[in-house]
Image (cartoon, rainbow, N blue to C red):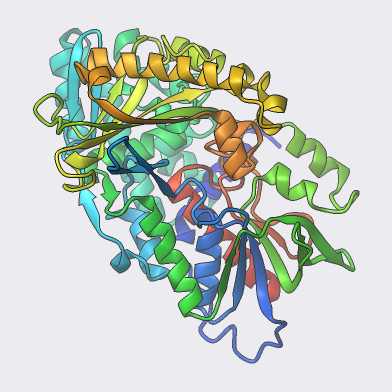
Length: 541
């Protein structure tokens, strides 16, 4: 395949993802069909699995969702911890901000009937960035607002900024046109008709920035939210950064009242109220085949469930390990073996003995300790939390009453590689956690110190409740290899065309998670769920 053809197919794959938002099955497609007890079994109640099941239930099919945990949601969940006085604090596992009021994510939530079941609150700012130069607040004023801010901060680079922002504006306009009118009938006209999209295809964020800009500090500033995607600009696909960043700047982000668990609970309710079923505390250990086709599952509790199809919200490696040996083609196994799990995280939840709006008025903030994102990423992979930087969220600023009266809840997170924690893996699994707990405590102290110095003076003296998680915690609760938080890494060579398809080589087996297309994040997981549903409908004819 030539590079030109590869670029064209990558763009078409991306557009197929965009078109997926508006796709709906033919009316009445589920009527008159002979069914077993369930039309499909969904392994895992993360957002992707819940989305597939919700789409099925809303369109007249009966899904069965099997979840190993005692609550649905995967990473879209929360838990509670008490302080010594009996005050209960809610701990949000993952959600800081999501674009749920605009674009494709809203359409998806509306289609499965949960948008009106959740309450959203808007972030006042698109992003707050803290570094050695102070604090920069990005307003929800679109790309024009960002350009004005960049020129004020980097006046000597104004001409290059203008050129880059003109490209970014053109890219956004071309994507909107592609999504509404589609590509030209003659694919050979694509580079001329959509030059900005064509230029970006196959490139990393760094490659795009390097083309227009020379000032390293300016490029790092534009790429300041790279941590949300788990990769530095040199590795992150430009597609995954420039388009979502433009959407956040234009529409702003939202948080869900009741934590992300409210979204997971709403999706579960849609499923059960339409005749589907969600069984908690049931871990699948085998995918059963009949004449080479996925036909059911077996659980650790000894139960067997059968259906016309199986959809897995579990990680791709875990899913394929449940299949009989030899079920996958060797070429496919080799391809899958070449993918790498994404970065993981260390998260610190703190209950504070006071309200802190007067100390830090921003609900969300990002602290960069290293000006170079490549250095910060390397530090995260090595577990050096004195250099990684952190992201923070004060939930009471978004949702009054989130914490007990007069208290505050703060969540601080850092990216983390798995290797620094791998040495504790066997002891952790065996319940021997002394050395692990010491390492977790050191990481927690470093992360708190970073937030205290840059964003919340006096923080360490306010803490009345503290809880932390590590990559091993993520691995324990999700079974994700390496405690990955974004599925497979979203590199330029693992995006869209080259990303794992939702339809697997095993007939009747589909993937609905961040490990498949289109990728990580709340929106990505929801789209993966719909793509699995669409593939299922297409295969059933």
